[in-house]
Every structure is written in C-alpha cells, then in structure tokens.
Length: 229
Ligand SMILES: [Zn+2]
Image 1 (tube, protein in one colour):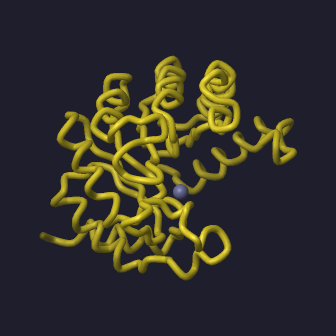
Image 2 (tube, rainbow, N blue to C red):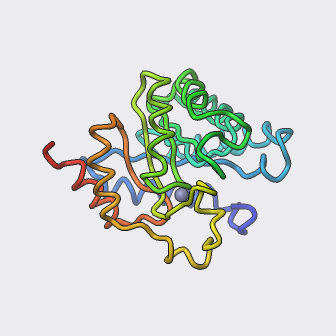
C-alpha cells in the first residue's frame, strides 16, 4: 500500500472492504480477511522478518476490528514469513486457513521446504486448514496437495490459478505469457468444474480460485463440487 501511494489509507480501505463483503454475505456466508506476504523478504532478505511481523500484525488487527469471521493467510513464498503470519493470527484468536504458493516448481517453496513440511509447520502453528494457492492450474497443483494431505490431519485447502503451466516451469508468473499475454494460457471453466468433482474424491476440504478466476469460474467449481458422485 505504501509503494502504491495508499499507505495512509490502509485502515480505511480494509474497513470498507470488509463492510462490503459483510453486506453481501449477510447471514449466508462467512467473511474471511485475506493476509498475504509483505514482499519485504523478497526485497530485503530474511533480516526483514521482524519488519514484516509489524505489517502483518497491523493487517490482522485491522481485519479483526472490521469484524471478519476468519483469516486466510495466502500467497506466502517463504515458510519463515508464513510462520510469522501464523503467530500474528494466533494472537488474534481468529480461525485461520493457511496456504503457501510454490514457484518455480511444486517441489519446494522459496526457502526450500517441501509441501509436506510446509503443511506440518502450518498445522502445528494452529491453522485449521492448510494447503496451496496461486501459481498452478488445478491439474498441476493436485500432486502437491496430495503430499500435504498425507502429512497432516487438518483439512486441505486449495485455490489454484486459472493459467496453464508447463513441465519446465510450474508457475504461471514465470511463463513467457506473464503478464501481458495471460489470455493465451487461460484454462477453461470446465477445468474448474472438474476440479470441483475431484475435490470430493481427493478429500479437499476447502476450495476456491486465485489469479485468472472470475465469478464464472467459482460457479463452475461449485457445480462440480455439488454433483452427485
Ligand atoms: Zn493468485
């Protein structure tokens, strides 16, 4: 927010976002507050973790004060920063879902931890569901979700991207099409419908969509999920 010139409005923007979501959710749905990585670790290294903690704690506090029902910690590249975020979330007392993003390969996160290890650490720090979001389309994300599922007893959460990745590079943000030709690697809504079907058989307890998804994708996902087996 600071870098975009909106730092002074951080509180106002968070409050307005939660207020809008709560109005739409009414009594029908819960409202989650999203908390993501600060980007300080990528820019300044692990020495910036305590500065990151201050930013994350502030975001969690604003979301809690605005009345969210739960938190989703998402799009963390470093497990070390996720751990800090989970500590901030635990202090808030809000139920927390935690998902890492894996790039350039699904085999490990940026600070070198395998999906199973990430899942264990996130569950041990109190996350009520753990998993992955962003970077891969559903088909490519599935193998890493299975690794996580085998490692923990909490539900597995998955919010794939809607962009196709390759065997050489398992993330869409490093494909040549990123960012100005993403339309050329968009996956279809049908793939999200199929993912909805798979979510049941694969035992995924929380599913959604990340970059490239719009409401039509979520509708397709819900249709697949609701189908009788
Ligand atoms: Zn995303």
